[in-house]
Length: 173
Image 1 (spheres, one colour):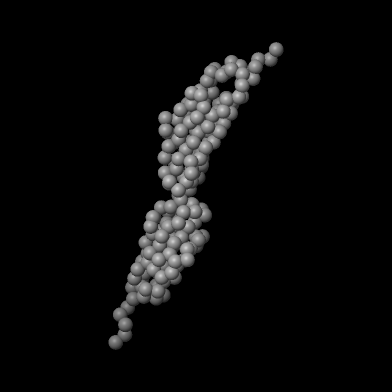
Image 2: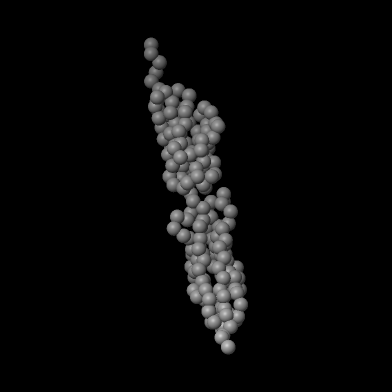
């Protein structure tokens, strides 16, 4: 008698969400137990058989295909971008005495999710918020430097810091 029909393979990804450059493990089952992997835009690991791995250099939902006995199955990897933030001061310069400046921070377009941010510099506090505004000052003559440091929800990414300076000049004679 002919051999029983072989079903399409299936695959799974662990973890299903990774950072850019982080490796996700791949596992296949079904089919005829001989597998080939395809991950367009991805960097496949050297795993053979039912296990492999993949990493990506860009963010987005990626599709991995496993093929066995001429049939294919797909699974997805969600590649999360790292944090990308801004910090602005308004005004960023002025004449002494300068009463105040508003520091505004938050994610830029395309940023990955931010867990929390902290501020440094006299009188600057983010309250842990990933975006917001805080008023600092007053200022006398000099340059005042502030920074915001944010953490990604993905522990793979290092904290990201951005500085801003406020320059206060003396009154002209």
